[in-house]
Amino acid sequence: MKRYTILFAMGLALIGCNSSEGDVLQSLEDIKTLQVTGVGEVEIMPDQFVISGAVIKQEPLIVNAMNKVADVVNSVQTELPEIQGLSTSEFNFASVNTTGVKDPACLLFNQEADRTNSTLRELEERVTKKICEDVTQQASVTFTFTGSPVDKAGNAISKLTEAGAVSVRLNGYKISNLEEIELTAGENAVANARDKADRLAQAGGSSIIGVKDLTSYVPTYRQQIATAPVVNTRGAGETTRILKAEPGQKTVTEMNLTPGPQTISASVSLEFIYK
Image 1: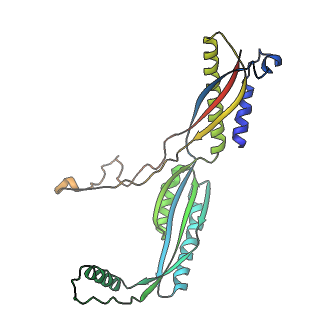
Image 2 (image 1 turned 120 degrees about the vertical axis):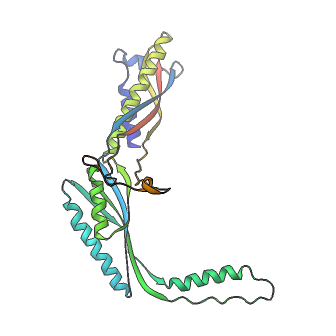
Image 3 (image 1 turned 45 degrees about the vertical axis):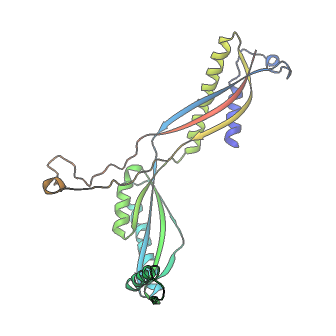
């Protein structure tokens, strides 16, 4: 609502300077209006990256599994901020989950029993399923890590993996001052609407003297998602091998995780008064 009000004020500010107050304050019966949609864009580079992952540990005793998870969490919280050039870092942890890990052989037997029992003929004896006991205990915690600048995402992923985190992935990129950029896009949209209104009014021999209403304002931005590529090799012989890089060439593990510029757009619908 705040941004909507600000943009309406910007629309009012676009009233022609050569119009008098008496021109604008017409009676409702005399007002002639023109509704125009304006669009605006701002291109900007994201300045933050977001990584998600999990820490999972298994031990016979749940307290030991939880302690091992805590060791990894403490390690990454200490080591990640020490990455050279990393200017900001923020961890968000979910609650720790604990669960018993069943005997996989027992679980497999029960699956086969279900499959067999579902195909039994009349009078055939059902297979009795087993009660599966816990063979160990598991503790886990999921997390998100937000940092900047964006070219340090690869370093952060490496540190997390080395510390013992699993399922580490680059979720995407963020713009820290997104609301301010959206307002800039909105300003551009208002200016675009005013330009259209002026041209349409002039084509009809009229002129814009004010803004009656801002009927809609919609900023749009879709966060870029970046995931690691999947390498598939098929066939036989040399064509399936990932060869060692020649001098001066990059190895296949050197991937550019820096995002490209992102576009924040906005659209506004303004109702102008003309005479």
